[in-house]
Image (cartoon, rainbow, N blue to C red; front, top):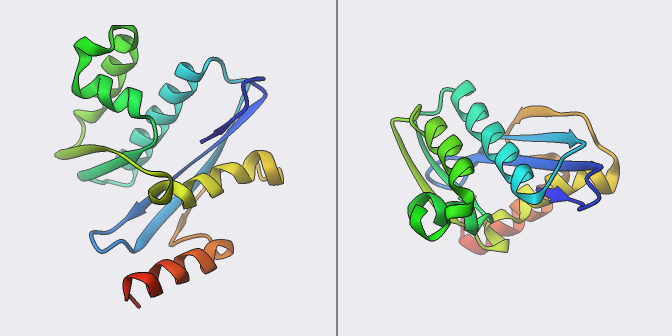
Amino acid sequence: MDWASRGESMGASWIVKDEKGKVLEHSRRAFVEVGSLTEVKLQLWLWVLESMRSLKKKKVRFVSSFGDLIEAIEKPSFWPALQFEVGEIKRELQAFEAWELRIGSWNTIRCASFIAQSVRNLGLTQSYVAAGHPKWLDHIYANDRSASGGN
């Protein structure tokens, strides 16, 4: 996500990859008049979970930079201030046959971050879901494929 503490707007995105790392779908959404950072994170998680359900995903690995929420889901007693958010997310996770949460490094989430930043940096406020990766990020995916020896 790309969020300004002024609360004006926020860009968010998700990317679905197959087990080989190929991008199957991606999405961007603009949120307006968002509140606190904790509220923003919850809104984003609920949007992602709803999207995965809508796409009929059954087994999902979620990679996020929100280490606090992931840790709070895995170790709720360590994060009592996030219990409401954890409860909401866990309730939505029940819709999946299998799920896994991971904390992602910048390199892992950079393309999703670039897509999210396009809302505030480029004024691209149209929300959408599309197949594959965004064509304007071809150079990054081409570099990733050549670095990993893929096609």
